[in-house]
Image (tube, rainbow over the protein chains, first blue to last red):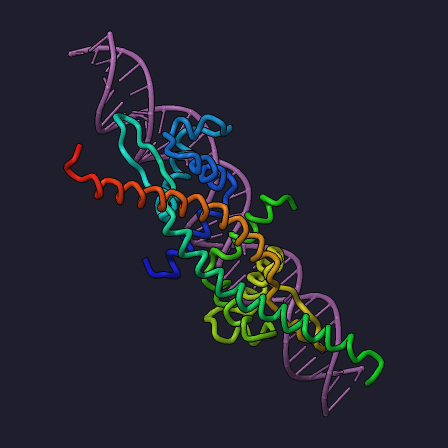
Length: 113
Length: 113
DNA sequence: ATTCTATATAACCTTTCAGTTATAGAATGA
DNA sequence: TCATTCTATAACTGAAAGGTTATATAGAAT
């Protein structure tokens, strides 16, 4: 996967509320598929599909415990999107500061031009 | 829109390489629709649709300059997703540190158990 | 061996998405 | 007014997303 494809996969994975809820659940530690499916009004295969999307994005990984395939959160993918977002945040915060300075300037000189 | 719906909209908007490229272009300042469309092998209506998705997510806003509708980046939406991501990063970095400590501990006591 | 549990896969359906072309509308300029 | 430029909308298409049920597979337990 190219970096762009990785961002596609990660943002796509995060764009669904069920998948974000799954990640929230996994913050408490490893959870099996059945346990993950339980709180949702959704079939087990649906959850398995969501897990596949999350795994493809590198947001989770799976282990093996007898028949169970416990899921755990994987942070690298989040680090990548966070890095991407930081670029934009820098620019925006930069603009914000420039705007701030402009407004302060206007206020300081009000009526004088 | 609920907070969850806002996250849906923002992550969905960021999940497309064309839209990310548009945002990258907008980092240099305001750009009109035609100017935005130019580098892409894509029709103008396609770009207008992408802009609508970005606008709906609050990632850009539009102005008015004669017939032109210049786009500019809007940072609030990014701030929201960044905040969301930070929660997960905290947990992951926490796990990472715990794992680190565990490994250090194992190494310090190697062969002694 | 058989059966039970946990998970994955297949086949299908419906809705959404990303693109197209053609056209409409809004502001400018001759 | 009429033509030109910039942008938006409508109607369509093909592909992908998100769900379903039914079934297959892997491992455990009886």
